[in-house]
Length: 85
Image 1 (cartoon, helix red, strand yellow):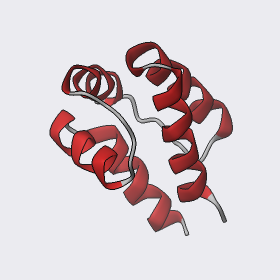
Image 2 (tube, helix red, strand yellow):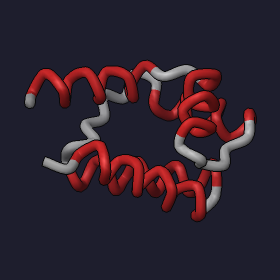
Image 3 (tube, one colour):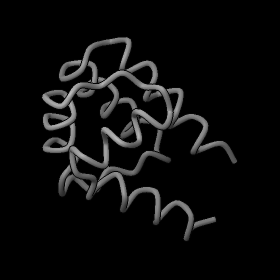
């Protein structure tokens, strides 16, 4: 399971705005280009572990600031699905 966690965390920590837009579309999450740029800039190099509840909660708060509360809720649902054991 650690390999799976490492892969997911690495992708989140290195995601580009274009990749974020692609995944948002794939999972029916509404994010525009400007929001994707802000979120990707925040994530880049942060080494966030979405499998740690406190780090994931902090990330969701930052996404809410950049993209709005509904988008943050949608992303949180996605993260919850990804982190289920």
